[in-house]
Figure 1 (cartoon, rainbow, N blue to C red):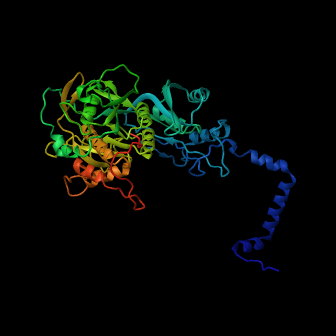
Figure 2 (figure 1 turned 90 degrees about the vertical axis):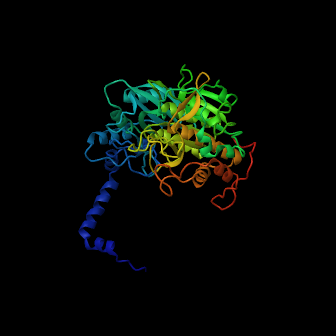
Figure 3 (figure 1 turned 30 degrees about the vertical axis):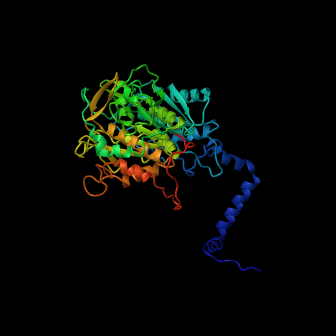
Length: 503
């Protein structure tokens, strides 16, 4: 006969015989009366409609407001109204997406509400994300439930979601509506419809043809002996581009108006396209590249603005058209939905480049430049000094000329202008040279080569003003032609273009 193990738990059991008899009696009572058990179970929450989540069993719906996206912490004990709303939604929702898993876990909604002093979003509008491609009836049900008016929606296969732009028709604030939306287990994420602005310093357009100092500072003439961007497509997400300008003849591979507007060409978009691909009176950094001219910014006063929803549409279009590089010469607040789309684009091998911003040394990081998947570019002048308005930060990867840059302007004209916008455009064109030289380069390969071949500026080593330093086009393109080692240590690519590689 096996010996009985007398551990701490068994000792407790035998030392408390009266308690043991009481527990056995209680168990017998429950077994003998099934109705009692059924009644007790009915008091608990109905988990049949709880949505399944990938990150554990906690119901993490938070009423707190934060300027950054994250999975919400557990409910605070001092907000009973939100907790009650959450329990009601979990027990009463009849959505097919609200299903329970065996461990009782639920999907956690993402939230991103603006800080109290942050007004960089469209008033009375919110964006929500829902898995898959819901029907109109399902979307209308969400609108009725949250007292919202649907303005615009689009399915984005790139991230497997449908995004909706909604208008708040009553006196509720954007923050308050987002707080309500994240408690709805049908909704994947909710956030403001943020505003973004182009990064250009306003300078009066001028005629003339002064020396393009940026070419020599970047060593582009030498790099052009190796590559000029042939068979590489760059998407320019910007304001309207004058596609008929002589500098851009033959390089526009497609156009897309994400605004659906009737506005004409704009100085900023035309200038950015020219920095990349001019090839007549001027010389761009990648004169043989193909451009996708994507209008995402509409004129607003003396500048041009766009919103989260429009930028997401633009990125999705660029990826669908096979862009290898996306130039984003604009800046704004951190945007979780844009970040998600950028991550999906990077996963497909798209190299993402953005202006660091023109808000100066005291500005917090601006986005999309500060996104981990984006190459952030600061601006220098003809003496390799930092542009005073250029943003700084740990996210800065590289620097390029951006002060007093001669570019095309609408109606066949030219302009001299400044800003980190143009620094980013020079880098986008340089990357096209690298990809022509070696089409198998990944976004990580590109970043590594750019930073390792840069000319150090400022304090020795990497710094928050210039990143790794000023880009060196000739060194970067030369290095791109060498085999790139993979994690296994084997060469990942050889030189030369490949007809089968997507543009």
